[in-house]
Amino acid sequence: MKYISHSPNETEEIARNLAKTVSAPKVICLIGDLGAGKTAFTRGFASAYGIDKGVSSPTFTLQHRYEAKGMRINHYDLYRLTDGDELLDIGFEEDIETGISLIEWPDAFMSLMPENHITVRITRGEGIDERIIEIEGAEA
Image 1 (cartoon, helix red, strand yellow):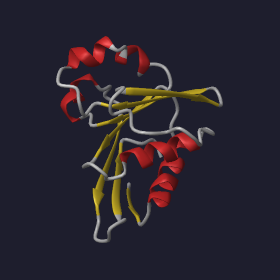
Image 2 (spheres, one colour):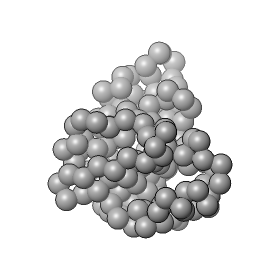
Image 3 (tube, rainbow, N blue to C red):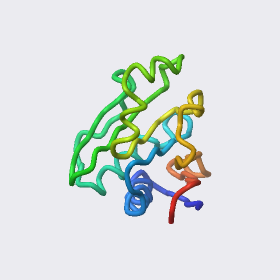
């Protein structure tokens, strides 16, 4: 599926719509440059579960965990990691079996992702806020 977003709000809406089609456990790999909209996508996804505040990039903590409506959402930022063992040491394998995990910067760790993961690629479009969002592996 391919979408064109013209604002962060539209990016969040695309993510909310995806959230309606995803059931746990599921891993969603978010791929895109700095400032592409990966965290905005996560914010929109989480809002579908009633999490409307506090969603930010876990750049320095590596992971944020949100709980609402009986759903656990794990939000990872792997930008600073250099070794898969570091990821495993923080309980990644257990976490991805509980809830839905959205993972920013998964590129170097794709061998640790389950086969049935969803990939969301976000690239810059023509305008300053335009984003091209491509979703692969979603059920709907």
